[in-house]
Image (tube, rainbow, N blue to C red):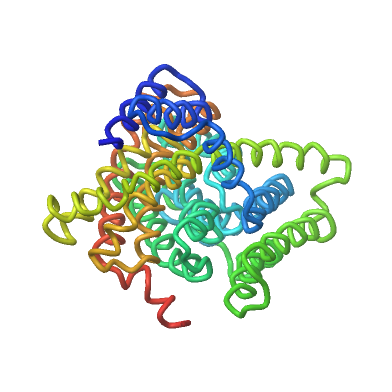
Amino acid sequence: MIISILAILFLIAIVLGIPLVYALLLTTIGAIAISGLDYSNSVVWHAFIGGVEPSHLLAIPLFIAAGAVLSKGGVGQRMIDFAAALFGWLPGGLAVVTVASSMLFGAVSGSAIAGAAAIGSIMIPGMEKRGYPKSYSAALIAVSGTLGVIIPPSISMLVYGFVANVSVKDLFLAGVGPGILFGLGLMGMCIWQGRRLGYDAAVERVSTGQVWHAFLRCVPALAMPAVILGGIWSGLFTPTEAASVAVVYGLVVSMAIQRSLKWTELPALLLDAFTTTAVVMLIIGATASLSWLITVEQVPQEMAAFIREQAGGKIAFLLILNIVLIIVGVFLEPLPALLLTAPLFIPAAKAFEIDPVQFGLIIVCNLAFGLFTPPVGGTLFVSARMARVGMGAISKQMIPFFLVSMIVLLAVTYFPPLSLWLVNLLR
């Protein structure tokens, strides 16, 4: 079975530390050679080029650029100030503020790593001054940063919509409920730990006027998700056009309204964003080559039939799916993991009559776990570096947050209305 050959070759490449793009291409070419298939290498390169050609992929670099502009433009500090005014008086207040700030920033950036870096650079030193252990702060930043993948606009949801031919508008709407629930779950854990362990004892509640003032400073940035989602939902513009609007809107907010980003900083900022985009697009192209081989060899159909026979029902299939996706997410970033796994599992999901929008949320939420799971999690690495704490200490502090996130994940998996209520309401 070619899927076994592909899995073994890819695992060997990853263990050897071969860069992901080359690992994907070597896996594709190696599987063709070992299986004795009559495909030339030129077909593989054509699939690579075809994977990055679709015009709708322009939305990816544009959303990355918009997130970079807002991140550099001082939006993070304003959102932290607003969250502190709302929640700073609670037990474990600064931890709650960290989660709330990550939710707000995720709604404007769409990137988990950008959110962890922007919020963590401010909150980790602040939490240390208030008596929080560095390992606790880093663990919280690593977990809450992943809300940027789940809360719309999300780049992962955008890519899934293109891969599965599912409405990006519906995916963005579906992400609202799970994103809020993940955030509330983490905030509840922070309050409980604050009371039990004495972290950051409650302080006096700020006045309504102070909350209002902090909110007004955030309004320009917080309006961005409303503009994007409202424009897509109303049909005013497509997801790709929405990404363009996001870039222009981010520039206006950061440079004209808040005046926290200078013209001289813009070239370096955009260069960094486009460098990130180049890496993402190379991975998409390499994944397209592997996906082409998987498709022409009818692996998804064979896998769907196998899963139907072994799983025996929808509940068992979803459990297997969660386990497989979390394991895959440990070794791969969400985007390449999504590009590899979605085509394999979509036929089985259709066979079990799972709504494709809900299925997309299940995949995105599962793969978000890989971002804060050792040994290669993106937000875990960023938070550990900022806090200068070892992975072991962070992982120990992360266990309660992991358990809360797992409970929410199971709710998203087995209770479709959690994701689909807003979609069905606005259809």
